[in-house]
Length: 196
Image (cartoon, rainbow, N blue to C red; front, side):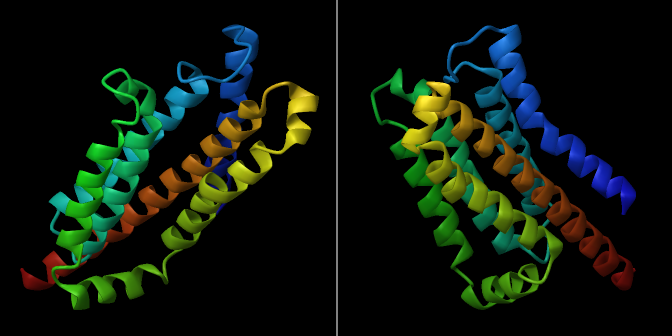
């Protein structure tokens, strides 16, 4: 338990470290698309996607749920990379996002009973609780807290708070993905051992 707490603390310091490097090492005046904070968010989302892809490839008992979660985080990654898609055409990130979302939802819901069983089992895991916290920080708290006009007066840059909180939320989601991956892969090994 102490080891997990220590790892969690180190991860939780990452947003502060990234913001420190952005402002005091790179001398940025605000957090933009090309900053350590943004790039770290994108790298974390990529790692999360890879973990869920490994769970899909493993043909886990949680296969359909893994596809659905993979699709969700892949759409978040594409959205975070919107500046690069804007080079093609402003707002063009929406097309690959829709493709991923529709295909992952369609696949996952081909067998709604299995998906429901997997979801019920997932809702009882620590991974779900951590993911719920991370997504709440990313999708709700960072937006509300980071867009308050108060921060414009205090910091002259609302993005600092919002991007730092988003990074913290993504770190929670990464920790959730690691817990999920360990759970799914451990489950598969136990299932495989029974059939030997």
